[in-house]
Amino acid sequence: MASTPHSPNTRKSSVERGASGASSGRRQGVQSGQSGQRGRAKQRNASATSSARRTGSARVPRGKSSSAAVSSAADGRRKPSKRQQRIYRRRRIVVLTALVVALALIAFCFYSLGRGVVAISDVIRHDDLTALVRREVPSAKHASGVRDCTAGDVRLELSEQSQTIPVGGSVDFTMTVAYKGSGSCLIDVSNASRVLTITSGEQTIWKSDACPANPHMLLMSKGDKRVDTLTWNADSTGSECVDDADLPRVNPGTYVAKLSLKNDAAAVSDPVPVIVQ
Image 1: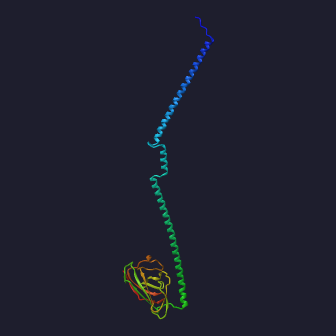
Image 2: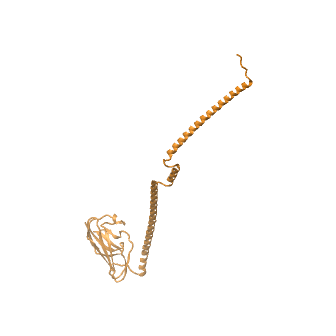
Image 3: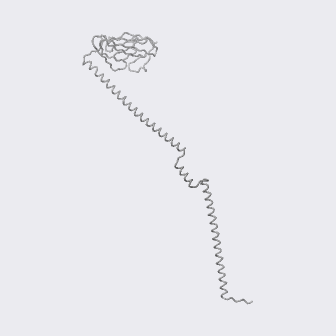
């Protein structure tokens, strides 16, 4: 069968249709790819929106907006809780207590320092006065020509509170210096010059001048009398000055007490017996 010859226009038309179909197919393919990409992008956006909503709903309490939550959080930071307020109060109390204690200690230190200064001043003043008396009395005596009292000027008297005492007990002696002369005289009535002596036989047991004493000078004239009290703790003195609490106690026995003037052996009282049992 003989083929029908095509005219040039017919071949051109076929070529154009083929080209048009190919172009249309490519456009449809591109559009289909773009539609698929847009669909996937929408799905991702939808998933992100849903996740954000879930997250937002979990963070913000129901019935409150996000702005209210932020405001509440800000208020919570500005205002401390009741527990924190109690802690702050306790801290303030502790600090104030420590401050008061420190001020009290400082005041006590200043007070103690002041008392110490006053005590030292008193001791210094007392020593100065004692030294002044020790210097001035002899000078006044020599300057005025007043003589010392002797056995012819004074009478010494001694009496005891109790004649019997237990071992380790004590007895009070009353010592009297009475003036009996015709003219004035000076006498030292300290325990170092007007001496109380306790003896047992020929042995001296206790003497009031075992420890030194400051002079106590008196100007005596007609009608004058000096009375003092001295306690014997039934102990025994030695050759050194020792506190009464450290002296040994005497044994049971009979002891004799006498009062005398150290610068005049003739001036002596009548003996007074004391029994220790």
